[in-house]
Length: 595
Image 1 (cartoon, rainbow, N blue to C red):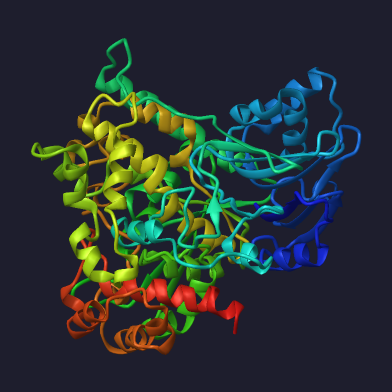
Image 2: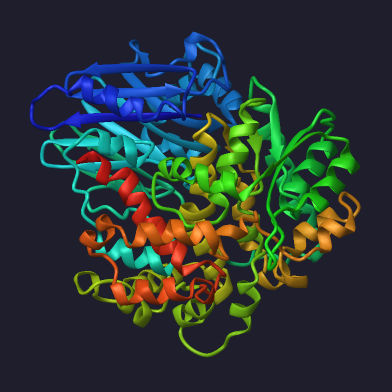
């Protein structure tokens, strides 16, 4: 797990390696163990390394294979690299390192851009072909690892976060009005390739791109999966058996493929608790677990320790429990916002940031439960959507998911940002993709391939990597995702959702953990905004910078500030926090460039 960046010039100029170093410096927290740069003609690369697989200097990056004429920067983990290594050895390739990085180089040389379809894991990487003067970049199927880029007539520049892109200079930082519509309608999800900034884009999950030294560019989607029933009927018991085996294999791979210990972020919910149970099931006895909790609010508890403690007791894990005061949350909030590659409103971002800080002092790699709710239908809005019958697919979805309908969005922003209903158009396009048997099949596939990428998955990557902690997400193993997509939605949504996981957990976990109401990583101070948190948000939204930026309707801001606890989204997020977070992110990450 690492941070990468680079620039390819189209204008005959050499890359500015001082600029590459500035970009690399913005990635240092993602890779605290080693840094390096490389240049060849029009191409410059930078890399920061977190040493997890092959801890030796032979695996440092940028990795250059002079014999093959290839140079690579890579972020992620390839779980099937031992098998690929043996296959490539059979083809006559020789290796000078013992990790997954060099396997990608050889795989690209052997199979070209089709190598991505053979990689099993999470990854973003760029390979420079010294002979052909082409740059090949790719992102994993589920978008677990980020890859941002900007381009002009004279260069293509890329990095693991937006901050590194901005450090390179010359980027259009004006607000993209289409992305702004998504930001306030889809819980801060801006589907790739857009970002909130006009000058920054991101490679779509399951896509790869080739750019030549003359600026020619080609993009290919290499992964798509059907959400249709198998030709042969499958019984409930067979579905449960297949899912259990696939998830157990996903957990095993993410535990074995590392040269350092692997722990678990244990929230107390079903998903992370099941990871602990499956690790025990495959014979792991020394399981390390970590939990975090916050102060209670009258409306909502701030921790789930009562449930995580049951799992710790059942499996005798080596457990660490951290309690955080609200005063600490507000004090550390600016740091968490600085670590966000894009503005994220999820209340658990700060929780993951503070938890990762503590966990990183003891361990480098953890497994986390992200993805289970999307893959197996665990959220409360899924049954409501399934019960809907009136309207188009996007109308059925929007009633239970959109943070703001288009009419409210028009009241949220100033006239300069009002326009078409971009979010409805985008979601309708995604729901209409072929090979989905039903409306709910299309919804769940869209959630896994698009919405989750730029909400919980990005949040976990950013907040853990801010402390040099690698988070692995077995519920987003692409083979498990493909299997679950063939499973009938009615089966997944049985008993309120996630029925296959609940059935699997019987006998492995205490019933209290399985049957508890669906919980979230609690951070109630950002949901019920009052006291010093309200003062903090008021200062942001009434600041000179916010007023001069002119994104928001002042009447809408005044309405939220007058009654902050009355205005929540359909997903129970604070609308005031949504506005304050975007403005604060812009102040911290964009305004500072010209300060």
